[in-house]
Image 1 (cartoon, rainbow, N blue to C red):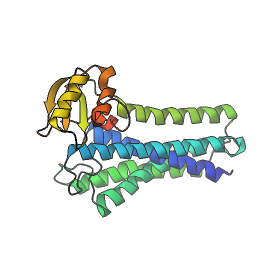
Image 2: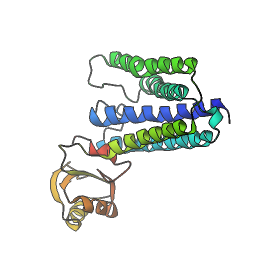
Image 3: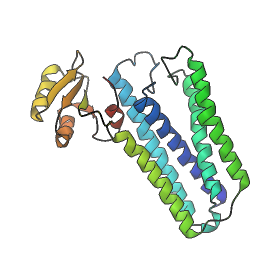
Length: 252
């Protein structure tokens, strides 16, 4: 297994980390857009959050593939490079933002970086260069610079650090904001108000807020009781796992 394989899988992992960075920062923390914000017929927050969840789930799959490939390459110690691995991850990170800008922002038009800006193209370009072009240049410089072969200990620590960064990105998407004591629940289209009230009663939840159709509710409930909503027709429950982590940060 050659050096190119090691670097290729590093790029795959960097691509996934770029997706995590974009989704966690822009979809959840800043909430400047969702994945399908500009798609006709996708105004329902339930659909927006659901597709954000699918997006994060896909990033998990890509990240796992990258880590698996790196671990396989790790068996051949002679092919492991130090700073070149960092460069490959940086290139993958930048490549994600370039692909996202060209495909999602300009060709498909499914979202823009900052939807409420009077000049969304300016934000698209700023993001494109800051998180796309600059990481690519840095990665290219690190690859060109080369580096000495890593020892077994160094290569193992590099893999552990990359794995922790990937797990940490996913875990961050699942944690609720500090100032959010409540749980948001999104019920399926076939669940009516009567079924929602029955679901709340079954887990002793207090209703805090609801949309007119009771498709999305905010409740005060014991953390250990949240999983019970899934047995009552819920599609997503904040704080209970992927892909509901996106919902944890959603303002309703």
